[in-house]
Image (cartoon, rainbow, N blue to C red; front, top):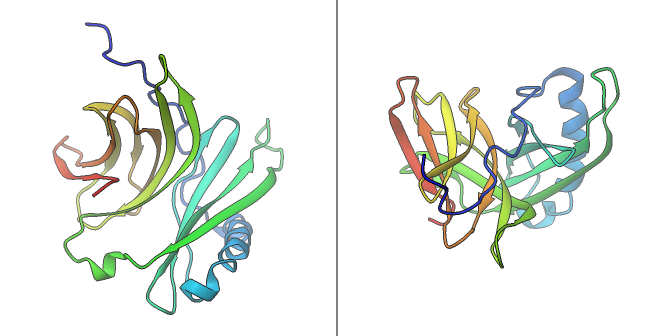
Length: 200
């Protein structure tokens, strides 16, 4: 195999461990996210039902993205982040949440195949002056048949996530060495069903 054209972090985040939150755990995450959403409620409107996405863990912190349609037809989106316990029986700590809003929703764009949100959560310093934006990307497939979402940078797969209830979460380098991140959706047979740049 020839040497890589650029050194870049691949599959840096842990795979999802908890799946889509439910029960008391969902209630805890919902309370955290709603508290953050109140900061933008005056502009976006009151959020409705919260939709959660698979968790991803990176640098010792776990991110659980969320979104909700609002009464004014916008969407509130963001994530809850916490420090997981060292052992399975340990309680997570240091909860915080981030929320923002957008007027661009899937309901207003029937031509969309993927409904994506993203947030830069850190950086990765590569060779020379090259710096990657480590980006949390979450979304849902608006078409049927997708079973795996991947993040690709310059034609190289840098992360992947199984699709659960049409939802997925990726954590990958973006805007690195002149390359920009794309999200691809694949079927069980390996057929690519959709592709979308974060910048379209």
